[in-house]
Length: 292
Image (cartoon, rainbow, N blue to C red; front, side, top):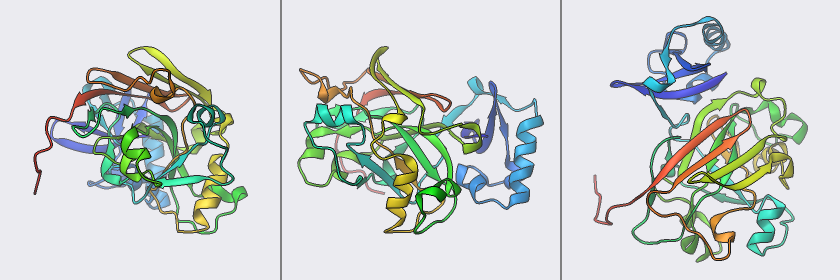
C-alpha cells in the first residue's frame, strides 16, 4: 500500500493512495488514525481491513483535492547516513567509510512533500540531498542482515536539506542537518510488498527542472539491510524511525563554483516506485524569538 497522511478541509487523516485518489482508512484503523505509524502498529485484523478497503474502494478524495503531509509526523528517531555513494564521496574529497557514518537529524525538521524549505537567516549555504528513506515498522534489536526486511515497514523519498557551513563547522553534522523545514519526506510511505528490490531503484533530483542527481540505490556503499543490522546493534529500532540512506553525487556544493539554493528555487526528488516530493525554497523571514 501507499500510505498517505493528508489534509482535507479541517481534517487530517491517514489514507491509502489508489491511482489518482486517496481512500480514508480511519474506519479500519480508528477515528484518530492520521499517521503511517498508526497502520504499522495496528492489529493484524485492522491492517487486513485497511488493505481490503484500499484494494476495493473506488471512492475517496482526488489527490488534487487534498494536501499531502509528512506520512510520519514525528519519527521517534531520524537517522541519516553520510558518504554512502561513491560519486558523492569523490565530490566531497573524502575517503570511503569503513563503517556507516551515522548522524541525527532532529525530528522537528520533518516537513511534508510539498511544504516550503526555509533559507535560514543565519546562512546562505543551503543545499539539497535526494535520498531513499527506510521506515521501521516493527521493534528490533540485534537484527541480522538476513532478517532486516522483517522490521522494515516501508520506504519513502527524502530531501536531506543541508546548511553546509553549519554542517562542516563541527565534527558531528547534526547542527547543519536539523533546521526547521529541512526534512521533507513523502509523498507517502510505500510498503515493501509494492517494491521488488529497494536496492535497485532509480533516484533523481532536479532544481528548477535541471537534473542534478541521477543514480540508483544499487550504488549505495551500505544498503538498507546492512544499515538495519548496524544500527540495531547499538539501540532498539522502533516503529516510525526513519533512516535516510545517503545521497549520490550532484549536490550543489559539489559543483564548481558551488550552487547554493536561493529563494524561488524548486527542488524535486523522485525515486522509482516511490513517487516524488517537490519543495520550494523561501526566505525564513527573520530570527526574532519564537517562544510558546
